[in-house]
Length: 411
Image 1 (cartoon, rainbow, N blue to C red):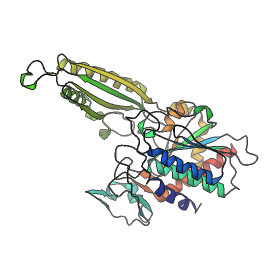
Image 2 (image 1 turned 45 degrees about the vertical axis):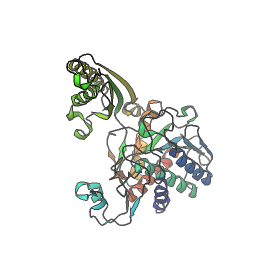
Image 3 (image 1 turned 135 degrees about the vertical axis):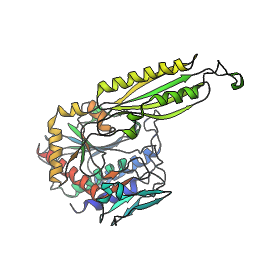
Image 4 (image 1 turned 30 degrees about the vertical axis):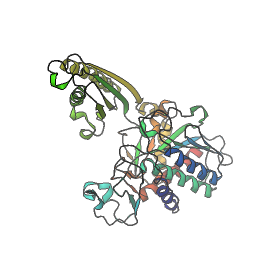
């Protein structure tokens, strides 16, 4: 499939220039107006392919329904999904993608003391002599997940230009606000026909993921007792200090920077306040539901500890589930993974199956009854100024998608 890079790369470079950063502080979907801009572009590109029923919903979901090849009307419908937004961890405004057509294997100076160093990244070392795209060091790149969008669109255009490729009915879904962890609050589930879906939202080439974290978030609210600090002895309960003490109780050995593989964590995300009131936002992640229950209980015990340290204060912990591990649900339908693994083999891509240390829209979609494993994009260092993506990796993802569509047409 020699044309895939030409179909994918220009799209990717175009898409990342749209500012689609989402915000977890906004309840509405989408949480940022820029997501509409890219959604409308995708809508027009899909219309140009003349592929069938296409819509942009009132909550910024782009959905295209592609009819099957003649004679394959009864084949199972499958979905391909990627998300429009980028994370707010690092700015996504004014992205300037830098294409390296033949990487020489040396460290790449991004400015400001930032380097892409192959000595520290074996995936980067493997790109010597190949093409890659990286940030200019001032923003993230947006390969999470605009690489996924570009790969789906490139594969779709390839299928449209090769009508001899037989396939069943398809659904293409581009969703907003995945990075906020909202869990598809406005997703039009009733209109979706897919028997299975596949998110294209992973990392290095070959990654295949069918299990993810159980995810919760917690808001801890501190109410202290304010008074003039010159006469505060025995009276003041400093809410800022309460929040800091609570954060210090979170075990450092169970933090994102201290864990990998199947180990979960607490991640304090934002702290703010004054003498009288303060708040602390925490993310909790674990693959094991029973351990997650322990983590939730620990927050309550930390709250009692802080209250005891600051007489006259109160600490309130409010928790909310964001998404659940999709493994059990996907395991109930083995064909979904069997066909995906065969698509990897036919595309010539070595499988690197691993858990997602995070989640995707597929986590929630699986919970809603549509098994949705995750496929690589070729991207690395997501949510950072060090983000880059492999051009051959993007083409490989496109090949996997095309083989996947062909195999489901035979199912």
